[in-house]
Length: 327
Image (cartoon, rainbow, N blue to C red; front, side, top):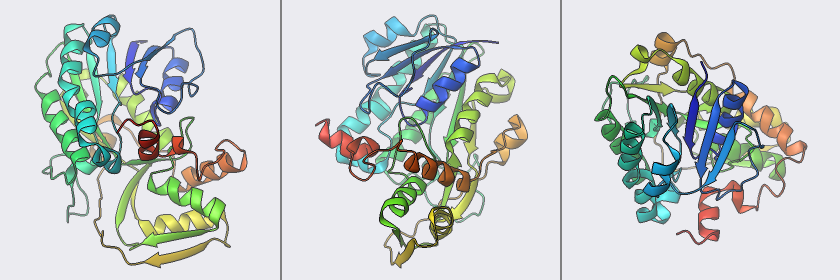
């Protein structure tokens, strides 16, 4: 079954890889995005409409959303430092814009709404496997806003409006709209250019997921029978590895000459999630390792796909927000 899909933030890190997959699968796609990181990350396609716009613009949403079957909501200021840089900007996009978006979607006849939350909503847990039924203890504004939006979307679940929330691990790997401010990609970039990476602490656990698997997770939620996902929440990650293990994997791929330095850290928080529910309920099992993501990063760097990757602010969310004087 093909759908008309409306994607907020569709020109972002994950969106720019998800959109081509949906088009390949035969869907029609409308993307709304501020295009802060460039409007050249998605190739033109007869079934693609790109709208340079703001999800806070309710008039625009009311004009564009009707006629779509599915909304996938990816748009946000997408990490803790970027939200902390300008809390009001973060709140306005990540929280205040959310209820109007959901209400307009439902009123417009959208039948399925997929919300991208974050595994950071759990905060720090001592349990080795953090599952979807555990309490939310968000530690930052970014994760608090994500948790607040989860509560909001739960209010709108109904027979004719299927809502589902996904809590992804940190995404890694190459994208047309590359981010180099997430842990695996940071380490890969520094190892490639500097031949030296510094790990602070090292024993902290960090769940990650390859970007190709993240894309597949959205496809699974799009195609799943509504009775399996209605009102549900799913974690999505590959494995919980320590920062030191991630660094060792990076050195293994990038070359033995990469120097690995360990320094003490004030932040010894560990995050670890279980993806058992999405596997058992929907059959989603990641097919790519974190090492695969590092190999993809190396190939992209060697192939010249990421020019000026140490200095160009387009790869770093907080730098782009600062340079655009958005905050």
